[in-house]
Amino acid sequence: MPASESKDRALVFGGSGFLGTRLLAALDSPVCEALSVSRNPGARPRTPNETIRDVAGDLSQAGVAETLIGLLQPRTVFLVAALARVGDCERDPGLARRLNTELPAEVARACKAFDLRLVFTSTDLVFSGEPPRESGYIESDPADSSQVYGRTKAEGESAVLEEYSSALVVRLPLLFGESVGRGLGASDSLLAALDRGDSPKLFTDEFRTPLDVDNAARALIELARKRESGRLHVAGPDRLSRHQFGERVVRARARPADLESLQAVTRADLGLADRPRDVSLDNSKAREILTTPLLSVSEALEKPRQT
Image 1 (tube, rainbow, N blue to C red):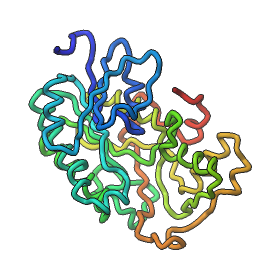
Image 2: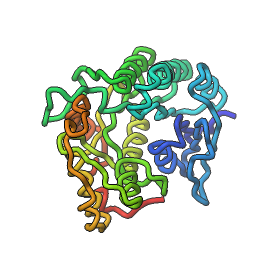
Image 3: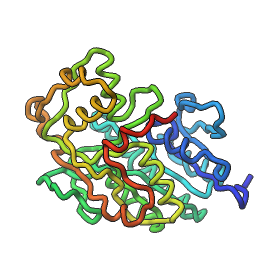
Image 4: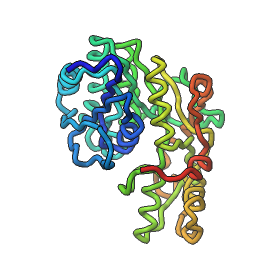
């Protein structure tokens, strides 16, 4: 049944993931019908009063996404599904290409055919981080990652915009924040490791511009409603090493005793000197467009935890 004229219908590919879950929570409202597509819908945490509709779909199979777009008839599509773990991409470059490059192209073609709004999320890891740039990468800087993950995501960006020039590609940084008890994202995974008694190794020489996942979700929704297009960097204002970030998380959660468990290491210490050194993003363009503020790590951590 077509979406009613008074209510938006938003489709999230990858709705059971860290970002997808929070994006759906932000979309679910009297003015928006939120639809979630994932291979395992049961993995998505649910809240008592939500009206989100779950649809099973194996996006690794060609044609599935296009078929679902035709059947579900959304007005807005958020493609946040990906093979995102760097190690998984290196072990299975074929699957990485399927989910990070071919799937985005298919979704873009379908969205163009139906004249839909499309937001495709990419990553700061499309950049190599060499030489380090304290000012941060801007949207026009060439993607130059040598890793499978960054390379296939960059190819996915190009494929989306070639197929559908009205689409928006949003490069996101390291995301942290509420994962509803699943230990996902940069902060919850760190706290879960500490709860297990681990001593996490955090780099002092690897820099990102972290952003709270709920903050990212709200920004993506605003950008979709404004029908922005092209490439955009949506990131936090802080350039932090992973170790600096970890310290802020632990302090904000009133767990100062855990500071001693954080191990400060360099990439060379672990034989990982080929990891990107500094993929900080310049968010100036996004800040000019958005009314949603892009919060610092401290500002985000001070806000009450959401469900």
